[in-house]
Image (cartoon, rainbow, N blue to C red; front, side, top):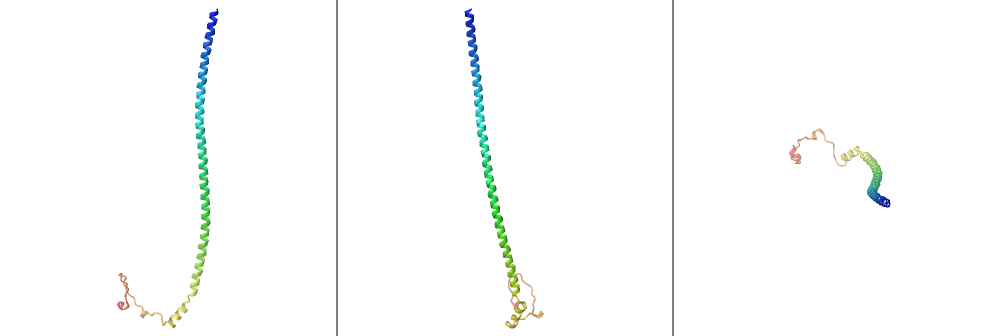
Length: 146
């Protein structure tokens, strides 16, 4: 009987050791899977953080661009308004000067100076000579026209 008990003990030990080895092997396998999955998650976490960081940087960059362009547009609108007011003032000044010149020219005064001081007179129909222009660009003298 004793030998039978030892055998059972030995088999039981052997079985336990085998079971233990299987457990250790399975545990290591699970642990390896966990480590592998942790590495994958670390890589995914890194890419997620990198992607989020890139998105934030791009958002800040384009926000700054938008703000700068709005500032530039506002400055240009202000300059346009200033230049339009200057243009309006120049047009008013130009109109005033044209009116002043038109008022300064007195046609009757010019005729009287021409008649009295310069001995000029208005031409009559007999004094007007019509001629045909040549295309050579040469200025004709009065003797050539008659």
